[in-house]
Length: 168
Image 1 (cartoon, rainbow, N blue to C red):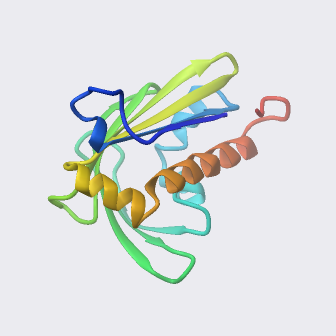
Image 2: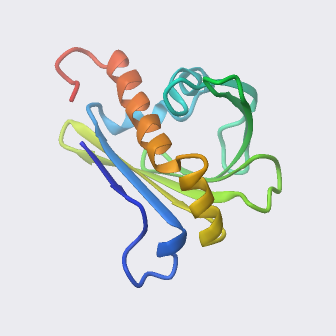
C-alpha cells in the first residue's frame, strides 16, 4: 500500500517545499534497512523504473558519501551525490542529495523504517531548499512518480530476499 502526499501539512512552514512518499513493504525492517546499507543491494533496485545505477564511490556512514550515476532509459546520465547525514539502524537515514558535492540545490531526505506487524512502513520525507526547486523536481523530473517507483522497486527486490509467505 502506498500513501503519497505532494506537500506537507497545511500551515506547516515547509509544506510547499516537501514531498512525502510512504509504502508498506512485506519484510522485517532490519532487512529493508539493510537494502540501503550495501551498494550491492542499492545497485539492484535504486531509482525509477527503467533506470540503472553505476556507483563511483560508496561509504555508508554518517559523513560518508555515495557518488553515482543514474542511467535513464533514454540514455541520459544523471550525476548524483548523496552525503549520509545520520544513520540510526534500523530506524532512520538522513541524507543530503544533489548532483555534486556542495550542490546549492541539494535537498534533504529523511527515511524512516517503522515495524508494522510482519511488514515495514518506509516513509521518505524530502525537503527542497525552495518551493521553486520542489516544483521543478515534480514537473520536470517527475519526483513523486519516481519516488513511488523507487519504493516499489525496493519492495520487489526485498521480496526476492524474503522467504515465501513473508511477502505483502
